[in-house]
Amino acid sequence: EPYAMLNFFSFTIKGYQFPFALCFFQLLMGGNIWMDLLGLVSGHLYYFLKEVVPAEYGRELIHTPHFLVVLMSKYQSGGAAPSRPAGAAGGAPVGGGGGGAPRP
Image 1 (cartoon, rainbow, N blue to C red):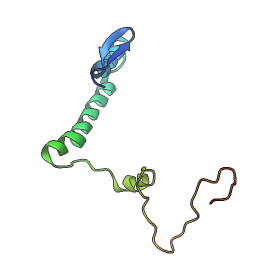
Image 2 (cartoon, rainbow, N blue to C red):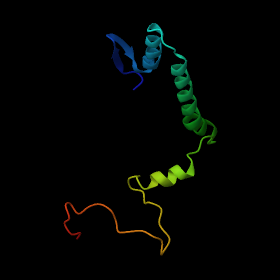
Image 3 (spheres, rainbow, N blue to C red):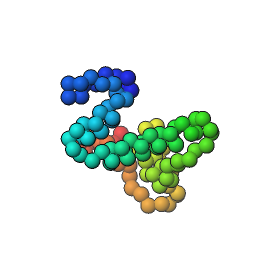
Image 4 (cartoon, one colour):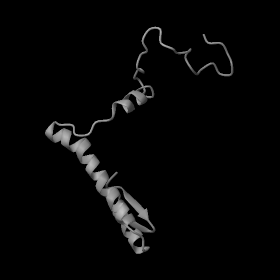
């Protein structure tokens, strides 16, 4: 939540300020903040291209690769896995049974 109050080393900050507090803390410790800033910019750019542009302009500029859609569709709740053609290799359904008990 962007406006939730967080405690960061006894300082109270709002949720949206947390990434900047991390960058500031990294800077105080003498570290390099360029990777943190690159992460902030890339996250904001992805959100803009994936959420804002389709909602405002009706165009999708970023698409999920098809192989990931196919791979993850079998793990989606309520969604069916892609069906196999008749005669394709495959075994019995996996899982269930509970210690070798026969299936109903």
